[in-house]
Image (cartoon, rainbow, N blue to C red):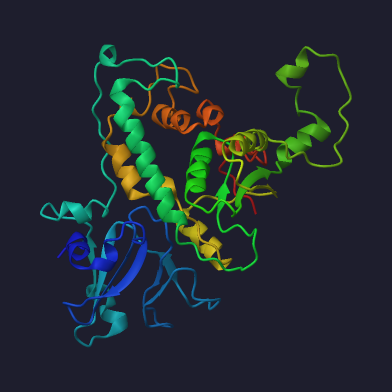
Length: 379
């Protein structure tokens, strides 16, 4: 039996939206329990395997508490797991032999179900460069990309709708937002925000969370000057005294583009109240979707990832590369070309032309303590 066989036979796992982490008893195979995570690891699932001090298995999405005897590890996304409880056994000594790792799919699996078992492989086809039409404007979609642009908008719109349509209303107070978008003002977050607007009642606000980081290295340079010399920009200027700043400026690039894109959203969607929330943070941790899910869940929130919908990923993976980008074109046109064409078609003209900026530079979190490769642990 494979994980995809299980997906075929058991309905609760077929839903492409909710299949993110699960624990389901088997109906046809009594005393067997199946559990696993989605292949992208969007939801956390930790496992404590039997140890001498705690000889039992424990699955938890957040934690098991502060007991130091728990030995939790993140469950792998590579398999669906089956724990066989069909016969008595010594839990600690025989546990490893009773826990079976099932491959997510087999060659004979039902494709209509198991296409959500794992992301599709990227289409490697590349035509000769002379055969690829070069676009010169986002305002006109080339004929060979019309369907791809329309399909991208459709799949992203469906993904966003599934993420926002069933969020419970915990407060009866009007004017309370249920949805917040991590919002830099870049093309990705703006498209998601605009599509969310389509599926949330107009009298309900949407929070836009704009993050900026206090960068100790930049603060030191502002106060003390550049060790060992001055910047190239100041070499041609007369010598001037650098006065230490009494406060930190969070007017970083992502804050500026966020405010600019806020105005475009207000023009396109005047009926919506947009709450632009400026989050100023002094440190950034390492990224991990499972870890992020545990942190937000512990605070009673849930992160949702429209771009990581398996439907969206499979659609994009199956498109030829030259339908998604064109490295011959300038930055702001050829990079994220398909998404830029879709954004323009949606009316997000300013966002469609905004150049990609890495989060660590847009938010000023890069090289916070002067490290060269960004690999120094910040306590």
